[in-house]
Length: 477
Ligand SMILES: NC(=O)C1=CN([C@@H]2O[C@H](COP(=O)(O)OP(=O)(O)OC[C@H]3O[C@@H](n4cnc5c(N)ncnc54)[C@H](OP(=O)(O)O)[C@@H]3O)[C@@H](O)[C@H]2O)[C@@H](O)CC1
Ligand SMILES: Nc1ncnc2c1ncn2[C@@H]1O[C@H](COP(=O)(O)OP(=O)(O)O)[C@@H](O)[C@H]1O
Ligand SMILES: [K+]
Image (cartoon, rainbow, N blue to C red; front, side, top):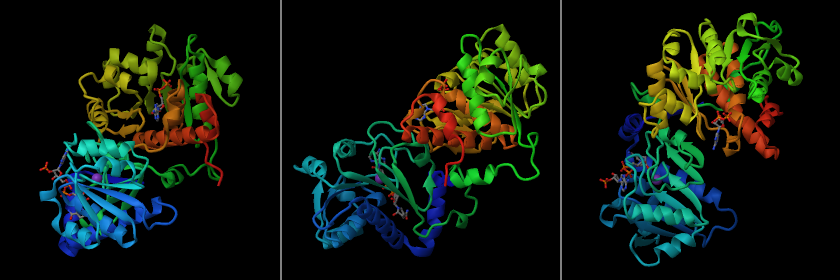
């Protein structure tokens, strides 16, 4: 699991190391970590390779200059472009000059050509103190860097990203690699501008800073192994989790099949389907136990309600029934539209685990007063006000629990932007809820499995949401 921290917490963590080791030592370590990644990213002979280091007025620029000095020692041709020559980190600049690095002001002639002809560009414009949008000349340098074919390496954070929220306003350095220091900043989980994320502790340890807590997490494969151990010798179909699916309607029979498939392939003990599409569901998933209505379905440990359900009176009746049950309930798609029209339904579930899985348009219908510009804050605020766990879909899906626990999903790709892929997701999460995971764990693990399935389906050259089914299981070792 990746733990991420607010910028304020990072400063507290840094302070412990600053007091112990001193700033010069930390900067040297940071610079070494950056230089190493530039060298890794540049295959082949190094001498003469052209590196441009973009240098802002703070310590982020200092790190970049010291990295440039190290690259000079390896024989690379390094030019530093200074955005604020009179505020540049003096010690780092002196060291860079001592290694015969070339120094230019950002408004010098030839800077654009240097950037477009570079083999690697190091972004030391702004780091932890960034407040986007980037001002001139940083905005133009970042735009030029993004147009270059060079490998782009960001120091601590890609410039243009808000460290706390990951939001972007204006140009942002589109990094291939980001080398961050001490601990991951929350914004780095949310943004997709960071590329490959490498966290070098440079001697810092969050555990050393009293009172500092994790702000958000991102799951990794190891978390799934711990949370989803699979059935043991004493398990049976009842102990493996029973999930019930209420989905599909005459207009949308496929949603029932897609959602049920997501549930079956996440491997609960049993999947029940309740609704009018039992024939279509059983034709594809014979292991499912089907009934006409949820009240006749028998025992379940979690319900999924909504995909393709429609928004008519019949759908409303089904939603009311399911929300009245004492087991965890996941509300998706059409059922979210109904919830937006009848907020009292959710209020009635106080104290019973509920997961809402809206995309942005559905979110705006249910929570019209919450600004979606900052997705992390939006999901947290929706969870706090509704008392439900909220999974806000998107390129980086965000999960927030009512107590503030927050996860950001980092698996997946734009391949998932295809009709029906959300139906599969709700089935996956329903299964995980039925196995007894906490709602935020089920939602975060479901988003991770779904995203990973999307990556694997894409790699296999397949298309269509039903392709996800075959890739939900554990990858072959
Ligand atoms: N602390 C430590 O010991 C260690 C720190 N380390 C490194 O230090 C970095 C943090 O350094 P930092 O605090 O000096 O600020 P930094 O991020 O370089 O920003 C500089 C200045 O930029 C400006 N600015 C802001 N937004 C802007 C915008 N949109 N457009 C234009 N300008 C903007 C703003 O100044 P302003 O002009 O607004 O007054 C700001 O003060 C950290 O990320 C890591 O790399 C490591 O070496 C490990 C040890
Ligand atoms: N550009 C994207 N990158 C990554 N994931 C995406 C992207 N677009 C959509 N997704 C994911 O695909 C799923 C789409 O769900 P949804 O919008 O409910 O679609 P549908 O209603 O057609 O099933 C969500 O899990 C979402 O996070
Ligand atoms: K940076």
